[in-house]
Length: 503
Image 1: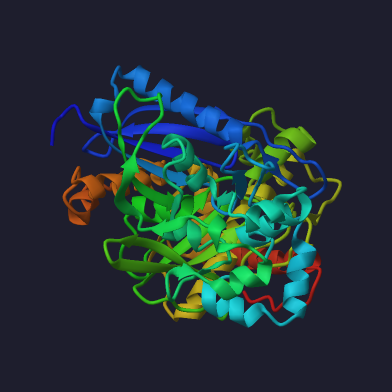
Image 2 (image 1 turned 135 degrees about the vertical axis):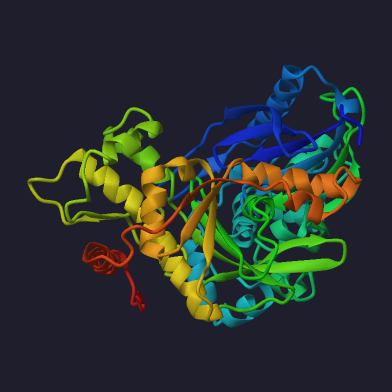
């Protein structure tokens, strides 16, 4: 492998776009990041401008490349990872989106999801897609756009509209409309993809009134799809890896053995467990999803989604104003030894796994005259960890296996206070890698495997290194037992519907 060759990873997240350049040792040589605007037209609605997403992504590509003075000739391949479920529909004649991107957090289709459940569609959707009926996924978002944008259904029937999650949109723009593709992981998050046949499911498309002509061609996660046509690069560069952000992180963490698991602490939190080569349907409200496909081999995973993770810290900053920057949260929370009996269930946009209560809203309970901002800050961090605890318990019940370790990544995994609390309530080792940007790293690895930049997974596996291991210190204390009981009580106060709460 030539020393002057690199892999470019595009990491298009929920609030920002990044470009990261990795060398053959899996080290970051250059990176650039910029935020883009979020729009909240109504309560529960979250939108983004697809053209701004592309413009910001293009700008950080150029910035990352210029920082180390390379050009397209130096890039062996591009890997893409993205916020999943976020839905974009565009017109192939105008090449313009017909509506803003509807973000994964958006709840506008909740009532339609209720209708599907009332019609008895739960089991068929679960068996085909591995998913629970929820506004979270792309399918009902596509339907909403077709129903509410004037002329959209007619254009769709004429074959003039295209749907894509953000990965498809970026590839479309990078190739100037020559490629309309997605990968199996993003496809598996639409509620329209059959994870048993690994194809778009006509029955589900008909159920939501979506023409199959809108859907991208589904590819594996690691193959050469085509080359760039954009002027960002002076030379054509292979696009050769795609995976949704959580699957990319699972791969970047080298959770390649069945039973291995990771949690990404980002805007939301996403816990995934590798299931091996056969999909298993959860009995505890977890999602079954495609982990990746490399060559002809498909790996599946359990996933537990937490809608509000790090974004609760943003709310403490922007909504309550008790911190000026997100980085202050750990110092503030460390000012008190515990929460003083305060519990914070951050259901600010509903609850996902394992409860799936889309109408739940956040609850802070146990407040007294002695409660301070520090107690609330600590309760917010513990609330993130407790949501993870709930999902781990659901995975244990589904598989019958105790976990040996939890690998962690994402911005909030740098919070030592929260990671230690996570180890304590799980009573297991929590491991943070040296490179916590595992989402981008996973995308880079998938792209590099496709072009031979890395020979095989065994070569990549040797690069993973732990930065810190958090061993449980207080796992069996009375205080932890009381906190677990308090969390269960707080969750009961939060839920708007009957739900079995298992500790």
